[in-house]
Amino acid sequence: MKVTYIEHSGFLLDTGDVYFLFDYYKGILPEFDKKKPLVVFVSHKHQDHFNPWIFSLADMHLDTLFVLAKGVPYKNLAVKFSKQLAAQGLNSILPLKKDISTIIMLSNGKELKIRTLRSTDEGVAFLLSYKDRIYYHAGDLNLWLLDGEDEQENKNMEKKYFTEMEKLKEMDIEIAFVPLDPRLECNAYCGLKTFLSYTNCQCVFPMHFWGKYDIIDAFLERYPEYTGIVKRITSKNQKFFIKKENLL
Ligand SMILES: [Zn+2]
Image (cartoon, rainbow, N blue to C red; front, side, top):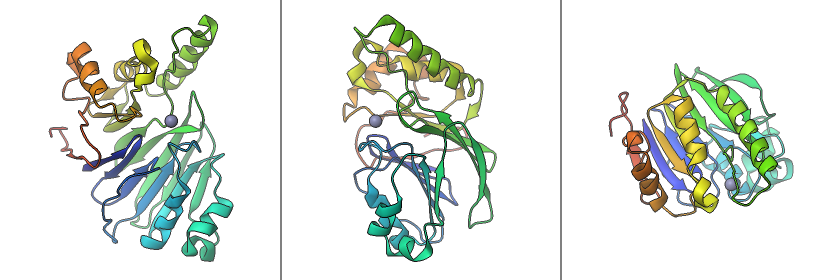
């Protein structure tokens, strides 16, 4: 399995026989093997998670499916950016509501189960189940605790986040992508720390850190028990090879 960090919350996961591209908004994409299906996920429409350019991937890689949170605009944009999508009537775009589960059949004959969680910001988080392995991309589902915010607001935020984390309780997640946002200052670690405490995940990629890679080191200094589990991203286009035992 290979994970490529693109930028911000954008990652490409190559499981071996399918590509999952998450929240691409800018950066360099590696060359795709044309024989493997590509599934493009968009957690919500904010500009740091969605670039309508992604629809042009359908012209470069014919076997592309788009899974978008409901609310991500696509009808005019897909036609504008892709001849292929314009010709085929947007059949390969699947908008999904919050808090639902669905199963799709990929062109390689394998099932992909998708569950959406409710973001604490906008849109959804994706929980995927593919060939007995579970993958999670949080989108902007995070514990957005703001220092100086109304205490009640922060309490509500905690309640919403814990409700979603309950759904992942003790789940064996193979690979997860979770926000670690330095703008939250003293509360920056809370969302990721909570995720790690709730789940059995041995491989977590921090994201949404606005190019401030040091926050990953700072997190691991504070919580050394997650060394090896929380991956140290140090540059764009960095590739990580994940074995079954999650040894790099
Ligand atoms: Zn964001």
